[in-house]
Amino acid sequence: MISDLFAEQLEQKNYIQEEFSELLIRLLDYGVLCRDESQVEEQLYDRFVQLKDQVEDYLQIIGVRILHDERFNYVRIYPPGAQVPGLPDEVDQPFNSGFRQRLSQLDVAVILVLRAEYEKSLREGQIDENGCVMLSMEALSLGMHNLLNRSLPETQTERARLLSRLKQLRLIWFKNDESEDHADSWLKIRPTINSFVSDEALSVLLDNE
Image 1 (tube, rainbow, N blue to C red):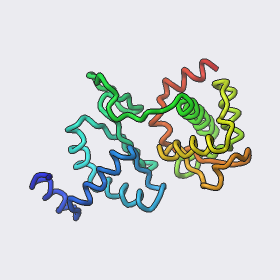
Image 2: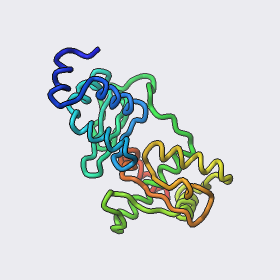
Image 3: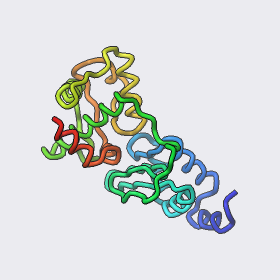
């Protein structure tokens, strides 16, 4: 149970404990909220904006840090000791990995290429009002080959699983019928990619190219 003082703070903002708990559980479960993802996340994001101080106070107890991008309306949380693009590193690093996301080598490779493609489109001014960049599957496949000398999964099932994973992380967006194996399919790279891959990691990738 939360303290009486905490409950009073929630009440002053016209929220109840169950609504605060719902927000926390969603953040800890998904690790990210994007306002334009769905109506549910729009409501939860707006709730976070109202309860930001309370959420930060609560998560600070367990060392969880929050990155809030007010321009593009998304929130991402990081476990204790995680390196966070845009936030200073912590002095003390934990021994184990805690609840960090476990990514495969392929996940990491595709995320790096997405970050490089996002940066390229950003420099060219090809970015929409929500900070998103359009990228074709053909361009993603070409980027994988040129930057990392790797290929996307060969089967449609494996590609769909990969894209669904990246969508779950709120790094990309696509229509379900566009996740099939078509070279002319398109996806959106979200600005959240910047909170997943640091400028230093991107520089290393481009230098290796």
